[in-house]
Amino acid sequence: MLSFERISDHEQVVFCNDEDTGLKAIIAIHNTTLGPALGGCRMRPYVTVDDALEDVLRLSKGMTYKCAAADVDFGGGKAVIIGDPEQDRSPELFRAFGQFVESLNGRFYTGTDMGTTPDDFVHARKETHCIVGVPEAYGGSGDSSVPTSLGVIYGLKATNKMLFGSDSLFGKRYAIQGLGKVGYKVAETLLEEGAELYVSDINHEALLNISSRAEQLSGSVKIVSGDDIYSTDADIFVPCALGGIINDQTINRFKCRAIVGSANNQLLDLKHAELLKNRGILYGPDYIVNSGGLIQVADELYGPNKERVLRGTKAIYETLTEIYLQSNIQGISTEAAANDFCESRIESRKKRNSFFSHKKRLKWEVRC
Ligand code: NAD
Image 1 (cartoon, rainbow, N blue to C red):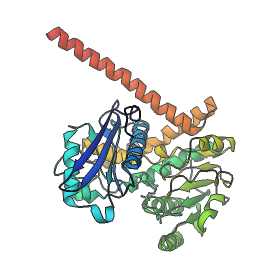
Image 2: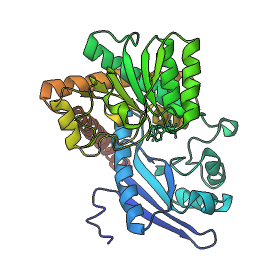
Image 3: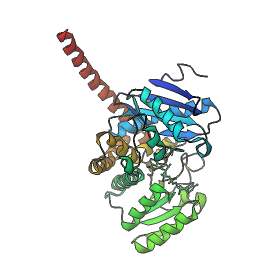
Image 4: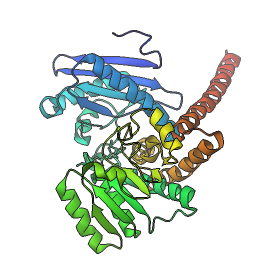
């Protein structure tokens, strides 16, 4: 049931319906204190509208925190299209979606997410300029998994510094779950640095590829099957596949000293962050560690610039270090420390924004 209570956390929720193309979408704008809302557009065959609404509300709120942590001038938003990406996608559908985005007059920027591709947004961009992450051939900034994997590497360095006193990646053991776009690049970098890897993937080819890559580089690879990836004797577990993998079933299996990876929503529940802390396992909050891709698409606002993206991505090291320190000082989980960090950043900007608006109003009043 839709009620204002249900969306009271959010600034604006827009239901989009286009009969000609069959588009049924929801755009949720959570918070625009830091700037216009930014968030990908997911396409899924949601069983009910309620499921779609639940998803878009949760994801848009998450984007507010992610944007705050990455220090980009955007707030949190997200869109979902209700439909089967295999059957229902069409250029016309994405153009219709682009028209709805345009109707928000710059309050919401979007691009690809699960079930949509950068090419879909080439069509959407014919109707609105509020699109990020289109292919490089169309002026976009390119494959976001490149800065995302680099961000994971900076997250691992910050974690090593905290645990071992040196941020060197050399000689440590890492267990990587998922060798897709992000995980494979992380694995390659770690191998170049002489690390020992445990790897798992349901895709056999990815395992073969990384094994033969290891032969050319200085590190080593051991293939682990299925759930055994949770209980290796690696120093750091690096989840780069599924969400919800830190849960009641896995929490006592971890023998690692830390968990730092790109997978979204790694904690099944906030209580698992507390349980990790009690077990002495350092957790790098996923939305900070995996923010390299966001930093890249947010940067498109100023025109693609790899140097600036690199600088922003490197800052993940400092942000994560700060979160680890605050978690230690306050005796709270790293996830709670990260949330506090983001909320106070938003709060301080709110004060600054209201100060500027106040000054603008004063000027206007003087002119009148
Ligand atoms: P991907 O689809 O390219 O790779 C995922 C890999 O995980 C695949 O190789 C797949 O075979 C493997 N996998 C799936 N189930 C598995 C299982 N049970 N055990 C082991 N491996 C399994 O995705 P990606 O772009 O590399 O993203 C990885 C994770 O990082 C996802 O959770 C994604 O949401 C998150 N993330 C990605 C980006 C990005 O820029 N690509 C940005 C932020 C967050």
